Image (cartoon, rainbow, N blue to C red; front, side):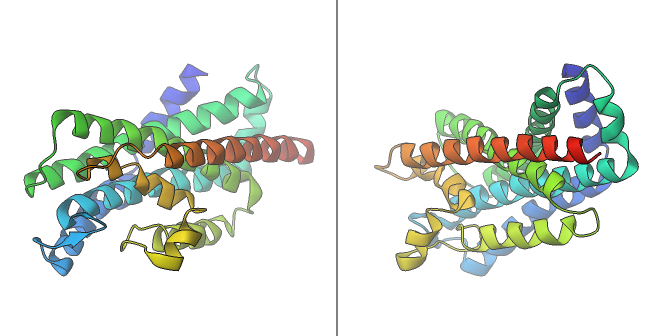
Length: 240
């Protein structure tokens, strides 16, 4: 399983589209948002530079694992690579876990690049806060890696990209990625994993502690999406 994870990670990091759309694009969007709002403004109780540093890091991380994973699995199913893997001694659950783990590893560059840009723009956090944010956002990305695997087995190869992009943009739009959500919208957003993902950063606000409710919600989504991915993998095996 470790060999499969290593191969998956190397293949992703060599992909130029990955580097452009999940590493560089969120960093460029960060510049756009902080200047659109005003560099001295605030958003969601945080300086705008800090708020959008986190939201663009989560945007890049979710894009990395959700769209990339779903499309790769769909193409592997179409090309017959998945069928070849089933002929090996690798059990189905190990394949699913390997896909989730390898996808989540590739979110680190997306997070670190945006954080580096944020630090260069003057975001000031303590060493513990920087480390905590990186750890929280990286671990949270496993939720969307599992969802990406599920989408990869649920959708047909010719429609997976459209389905994933619609789901991705909808979750980002109503999850606090583009703007802070408040009022009734915030009540509904609590059932959105992207909103919970962005909530992991609220401990950086003065007087706020780590949001354990968001952690519990993301844990529930991780269990749900992993179970769905495993079930869809087994269904695909029976149909092969």
